[in-house]
Length: 429
Image (cartoon, rainbow, N blue to C red; front, side):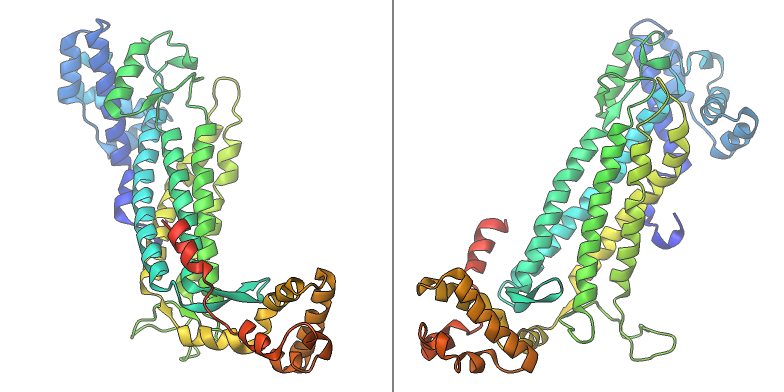
């Protein structure tokens, strides 16, 4: 991932230093259990724990010769262990170390993303409550529908990200796996008790039945959930972009005093953060297909999954962490313009109340079809001629047979929906 979208804490998880440290921790635990069950001498386990270390630059140099990263790593660590190095990496295969280490890295990144999501939920809930009764027009197909509140709109996002948090927890649990079962997963060269011991020490679960690798359906699930979270981020970003349009200007991203919106037009205040999040969401979703394709490997294993994982696992988790952090900033600092929301509600001069009138007429005894016809005829007249809806209704003699002018006036007032309080009380928890 390019430095522009890197945050140091999550970047360090994917650094070679951290990867080799995790591998070394796993190898030390393997030796520890092997000595405990009498497979290798206890002194060997003690020496491995005491002396096992690595040098990243030396490993990279060795890899140019071995053309095998794990063998390069083993050779480097063995150099530091010395006499008892023959018991290092005893009875296991590369994937035991790589995949168990990969699980830990994914878990570590998942926990960082989990924290950012939790912060986002707090911010969304706070803003939702703040604007609980701030009226604005609801839109379907981009067209005025009926009034809602900005708090209710934010409440929808709050619940969506609340679901995402639960999904992420399931995804972290899905990849929280240890697999130390030797070549082709038969435990032919390693005692199953070793896997159980390492899993317990590292707070992982043992794989049910591995091949030679941890089955990639687990990873596909993890990255699919990240893709869903990315799409939720984009949905929010697109909403801000729409609401910030000049002709609406109901919500606006923060614009700093020294910020510049355009190299050519000094007046510009663009929703660049939300546009940036829209682009990053596309990238985050791009990992979903290759992660699913990685499920399909030859027999007990091949390495066609390895190259693509080395690229997208760091990049996608880093991009999502950055996106959530940026979204948190957008939510915390966005400017809301209730007066513009009020102005935009009234753009169609009462047309948004058409359903109220439709329902009232059916309560007066009209068929739904007849009531709809009467209301639509007047609504289209108001729309096409840019006239007040209520003024046109007051002239409709057919309509006035069923409803009085006083009732019309009361009915077509734009008031806060009494059900909003119920929604907040019962559904925004």
